[in-house]
Length: 348
Image (cartoon, rainbow, N blue to C red; front, top):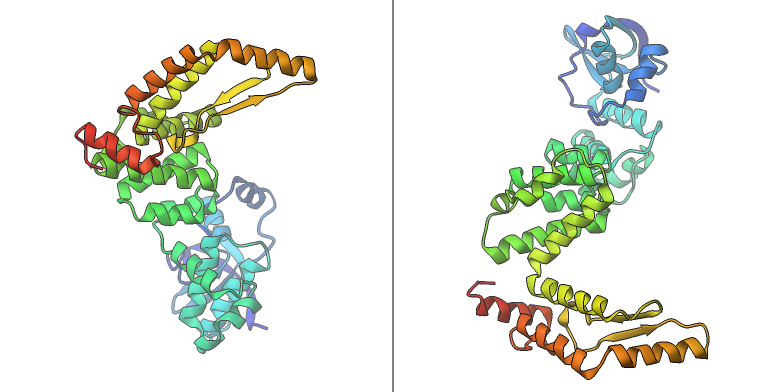
């Protein structure tokens, strides 16, 4: 047990700029504000006296909110002067892990604190486990890196608008570009896979067009994702389609021509013809949905009448014009792009 006394301390005497033992994020929820305003502090924060000031050990948010609400004093648990830094670190971590599950960033801060204050580094894993942290050192090292990311990325992780792996992707970009994309993620709330897709497409577009990412993001189309989004699903779909079309212009044109052709066929319900994905083969798919032999033969006859050799040949002629005299046939997407870009006097 820690040696402490419950004392009434002036808030002005507590140095909140000293964040050596801070584990929690700086994000303060309205619920915490309302609770402290109406009920007050139920769980006294921990502090320790350092000369003429007090250093906060745990309860940073409570202290900050009370100060913002105009409070002057607080009942705090004041640790004895003989309390070591290692004991303070353990207390700071336990005060957080025993109350809630930590975010990856908070876990990283806690692990970093253990590494700084622990006297016997070979006990890292066992000490982490005893303090309520995961015992997987590889994971803890990853979270520690997260706790050293720029503040806006840490905030995104803690608010669960930016996935941990996406934050590391964004860190590799310029700060301005990363901030813009992080703002999109905050506004659009895409899933982890969609975040990865967006960053990957943007990176590939910048490379293919030989432009800096910051310049690419100045495209007027992207401005619509900077502010309040009324329909996140629609806006996210618009962004992904635009990036796909810009990254894969040949495939996008191919899909547009094929979809227009399939609509004009008027095949009706129960019939769908699908093009080969990404131009990687000549294998088209005809799907037929039917209830009995009568509906099956009726739909087969519909196919025979609508998809005639003439209609099919006209489609192929249009597709061949897009894909430079049919070079998509039997080629991978990368091969097709290299051919297309050379023909258009672009560098891959």
